[in-house]
Image (cartoon, rainbow, N blue to C red; front, side, top):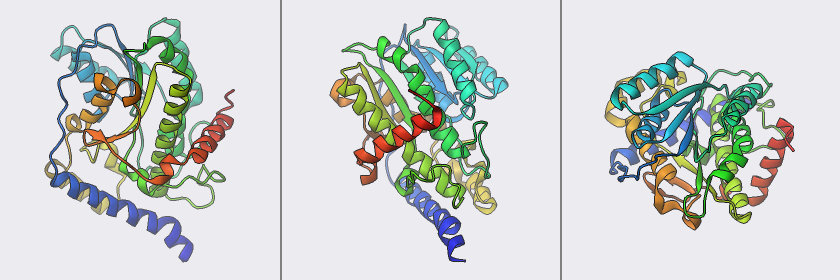
Length: 326
């Protein structure tokens, strides 16, 4: 009984209470608005999960500013429909869709190989795609789904594209890696001996843990890049609670309540995309001003575990071993 409470019920209660707290903060705080951003002509961006929700709004805004945007996603029909809508709105938009399944390391490798064959620069990588509270299952490579898709797939994608990001940035116009995380990381925990949640499984805990892993990766990557003098920055962004399909696996009564109240209490996808776009495009975040954790339009402090350098390194090395990376 106690193991059930500890492994399943407690993580669920913690996440729902955190969600209530975030909603209250959103309700009584002013929604951040994206400042006017400079044109992005000549720049190339990859946005995972760019066919809908926050990702779609990020793609749409970047395309409006002249960037060549590549949507990486599993659903080709959804991606092509997004492109049609954007091109109808902006006739000169340069947007395309490429198949990318973050639950498959083979798919990630194929996506990167196809991209590199084109000899394009890569100025912006937005790691946006994700799953939340999905039923217990494993990716194609045998990883727990939240850990595999939200974190490990993006870890692999970023590592494989890192040389192109480095070569595309300059001292005055660095390349950007933006990891879309969540306030749920605050109740996450990294168990290095059980990254796949084999001992006790809870979708709530697995989701929160994957979001903490994203922050640890983002922080470690930024420090490595800055320490090596490379013109690339890495940051994590919390878009807030946004009215998207991400919540479709909520406990049924709460899902029904969410559907009814979302338009009143949740941010729109465009509002949720504002901080993501700021982190990806703002000239104010060059050099030492880059990196960090961003929410509500500004840099925020977060939990102490996020700054644990040994934990960052241990997770980094464990991830490399899991993916057989040199």
